Every structure is written in structure tokens, then in C-alpha cells.
Image (cartoon, rainbow, N blue to C red; front, side, top):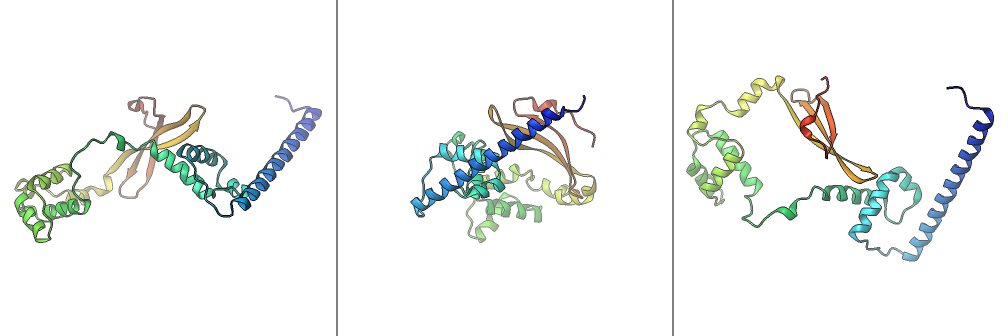
Length: 228
């Protein structure tokens, strides 16, 4: 393709300069308007609805924190970007799907049960229950069994006849890797679209390799692993 004619290049330069000056004028107007509004408010809080927070958060994310600082916005830039993060997180909030039921055991007690079972391979449910009772924790045998099963810990005496998981990991740590998906939210003309990234991490040196990415609407089984 040949070079652009000098006259056309000159006209484009003039138009570009005019657009830039016009944008500066708009920004200066918005800054002046925001300053006047802040003076009128005199520190009073404006209460925004959830829909308004989502709208402002989306717009703020597109503008970016650096540009927001120059605009002297009514709501501070960090708050606007926090609203955007909350809007994205709300997409993955499935609390409305949770049905009624007995609350789960406290995380601290679950960790204590697992530590007792791993440090004492010959302890059964009753022995662990007694040890917890000595620490003023009243936990049923069924709850202890569920905690161990959920975390892949076998009941005694089978637990004492197998190699502990911690020992296995130490022996094979340099050749082990883990893989998982993470999500990235991208604004498109159709709204907020989720992209899945498949990554692999070496447990020994924490090196991460991105294996592929797909939009949420596509079949995740169609990932084509890239060369590692």
C-alpha cells in the first residue's frame, strides 16, 4: 500500500487535533461540574441503588483508575472500581440456590479433626470424639466420619496401614503438577462475558503455564492444550 497523500495526512492531523481539544474541553466541563456539585453537597452522602452502582462501576472500569483521578469524580475512584468487582462477584453468588439445612461444622473444628486423624493413624471416630470433648468441643461420630470422608481420610485401622498423604507428597513433590480453571470477566457489546482459562502449575517451582482459554458458552472439553 502506498503512502498517504500529503493533503489527506494534513487533514487527518487537523481533525485529530480538533477531537483532542474537544475531549479536553468536555473533561474540563465535567471537572467543573463535579466540583460545584461537591460544594453543594458539603460532605453529604449520595445513596445509590444497586443498579446505579453497577452502571457506574462498569463505566469506571472502562475509564480506568488513572483517568478517574483526573476527573475529580463525586465517588472516589477506588469505590467505583470496588463496585465493579462486587458486580462481577455477584454473578458467581449462588447463595439463592442453597436450600435449608443444618449449618456445617466450624472450619476450625474440621481442621482439628483432620489433624488428629493424620497425626494419630490408629484413632477411630470414638477416640477423636473423646479428644474433642476434652477440648470442650461436642461433635458427633457421624460428623467426624463426614469430615474425614469429605477430605479423603480413611477410617482407622485402614488409615494406619497406608502411606500418609503428606509422605507421598514429599517423595514426589518435584514431579507433581496441578491444573485448574480461572475466570476472567470481559465487557462486550452483549454485556459481561465470562472467559475460562485453563492453567497448569508446577508444585516445586510454582511455574505457571496457560494451556488455553474459551468463552463460557463454548464446550470446555474442547480445550486444545498448547505446547508446554
